[in-house]
Length: 336
Image 1 (tube, rainbow, N blue to C red):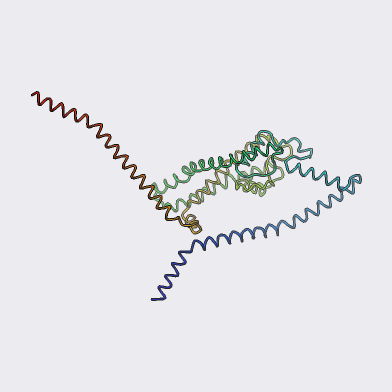
Image 2 (tube, rainbow, N blue to C red; image 1 turned 180 degrees about the vertical axis):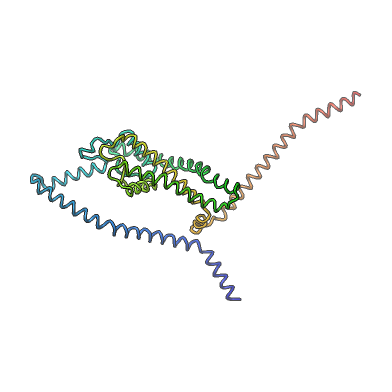
């Protein structure tokens, strides 16, 4: 008896504090995942960085040996200036001097990366006025973009997710959970095909130095709004139809971001993911539920009082007509 009571009390205690424990595991797991990523990136990329540094130092020494008129300080000043200009998207190479970074289509592409928080970093404002306008433009534009994306995704989800699931559930009698799961998988596959695999094949064909993996890498980095900036389309030498190409990429980024959000919203509505998310959330405060109930009751009472007032008004409007009928009837009987 005592053992059963103790076991029941332990179970209740664990259930009561389950969510804080799950939240603690979530925090620890996230920190460990960050450390894991740092270890892997460091072990993979650090040797390549060391080789690149050695190659650059060898090239620099060879260049100085071939050009005795230059000193190390002069070469460093020139390279510093070149790298500074390159960080602003300006190159001194003769084969890239024809590409302007701030024509209309390039500026439109830059505005889309700013508002979507992708931010490749290959092109940045040069002037103080441009930087100030970028700040103001972002402060207003990013919330505006979130509102726009939320409204668009809500409408698309209604027609792409909710109605098909409801149709197959009511018309064919399939389980709603099964239909939702199959629909989410199919929608994810179609989105991956239309916005990742096919664009990756197109970019690998249009960009001279990109293979399929690099093109797919660009698509994922862009549509996930990471935007590292190591691969930016339309920046190659003598790019044909560059303005049209940049405009098409801008449309692709916006539509792809919307498609990604629709897929994420569809998966987040699955029953398993809802249960999994609830493990880490805090329970609603009871006062909030009571407040919602009171507000609902107040609205119901106000609606009932409004209906009663409306009935009284109708009765008042009908009373004169009835009174005139009664008075007319009494007068007629008196005359008779």
